[in-house]
Each structure stands twice: as C-alpha cells, then as structure tokens.
Amino acid sequence: MGSTTIKLSTETRDRIRALGGDTYEETIVEALDALEADRFWAQAEAAAAHRALLSSGERDALAAREADVDAAFDGLG
Image 1 (cartoon, rainbow, N blue to C red):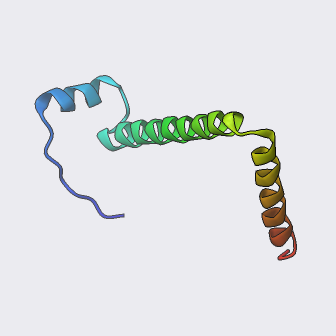
Image 2: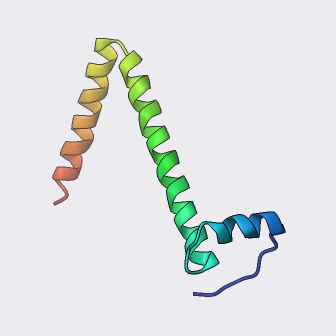
C-alpha cells in the first residue's frame, strides 16, 4: 500500500496523538471506521423511521417488491 503526507494543524495532530493508537494511521483508520459505522446506522434508522410512516398499503407494496427481489436472487444460486 502506498502512502502520502497530509498537512494537519498541530491541534489536530495532538488530538490524534491523544487517542493513543500505536500509529497515527491506526488511529485515523479506527476513527474512520467509527464514523462510517455511525453514518450507516443513522441511515438505517432514518429508513426504519420512513418505513414506519408508510401506510399499510405502501408497506405491503414495498414488502411485495422486496420479496420479488429476494426471489430473483434466490434463482441465481
């Protein structure tokens, strides 16, 4: 894997250092993983909230479309 140099403020560098990873890269990767997970779950919760607002007919139609997609993928195996 290649590497690069990035410019950080001394404050940002100190924040990374304070998090205590073995290397800056390890600490940054851990932080990025946490951010990605946070965004994933925020999107999942937003989708669940949206689904909860659908009428029963809309939920039934959505469930039918999802079943069609599942069936199509089941046929590929």
